[in-house]
Length: 448
Image (cartoon, rainbow, N blue to C red; front, side, top):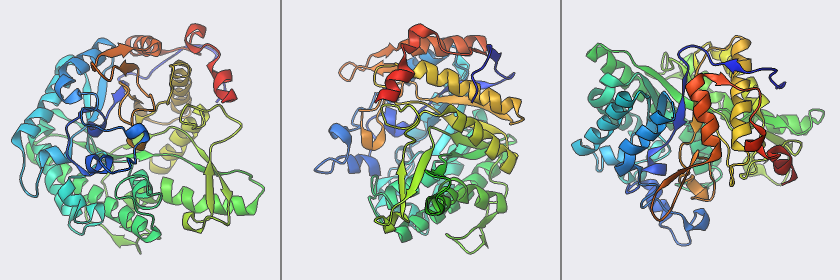
């Protein structure tokens, strides 16, 4: 992306705020991930657990007020299925009322709620009988989605059925880094199919419930766009090794949704009930792109060795920082789907808040580049508001505008939060972040 020459204004009615997920912030949840965290030895960096997380479940009113005071106008959060349905067919009204109140507070303080129904976690009872691969998982998910839409849907317009289905399938069933910690191509394909059916069933349930209530629901998935580029364009093996993972991770799910059919290699083109018309917009999660080289020692990974572009600066997660990739992603997805786009996650792991200001400014300018080129982008939700539990990385990776004292749970604003507040308040994106916020961070990051 070429550097912006001057400050630019966000489009009218642009949604701008932050995104969170229940398991990562609430605390006190009993689900498949909390069971995973209790394993010995711990599969989580530094033994992190979500016993309290950042205590958002009890602090949500103050937390949402904090975001509104920082001039944000939208907030993405997830409902925890394990709270709503702690055992099969038994629904906790208090849990539903809690999430209903979260929506009401969002509305009261001026935050447009964007509600996710499944953000990586499952009730333990479902996980124990096959999880997303269980034959009845789509019907069970539809029942849960319909209940949520019925109880809180009157005040919710934007819905996300499933967060990053490709990430969940790969991390849980191929890489084995997340529950159920499998390493099987067959099970990964089954997971892809199960998630597609769950999305279709959940989207149909939300749409039907909204219609019955006389309202409107905009439904999507939060699609993780992480392009797999060959390390060497001139190398045929690198190009071949990148092609299939790129299609499976970045396009299979979307193209299946658009066609209404479960496409190869997961299915044989069979039609899936509820899939056609299941995307009213497209949620886009973007962090980085990968470079792929052919490795004959990795048959289980389809001979694809994944790495970060060595020519780019890296975050403290060692992900390449590449705002041009966001512009490319938005334009490619817009041209392929012609669906309105909502950036449902974008952020940077940054231990000392040295990278975040420049990262946000550069990526928002990339968004505006895509808008100028014709893409219909409706909003930007930064990952995340507060440093929280980052799955297998525990609390070791810092993505928030606010740090959280692990003892007192006090929230402390980082310098980058002031810049984001000014952007939210003014609707103006500067050409570059102020020098005092960046402190030569690109040079520092590139040296890592």
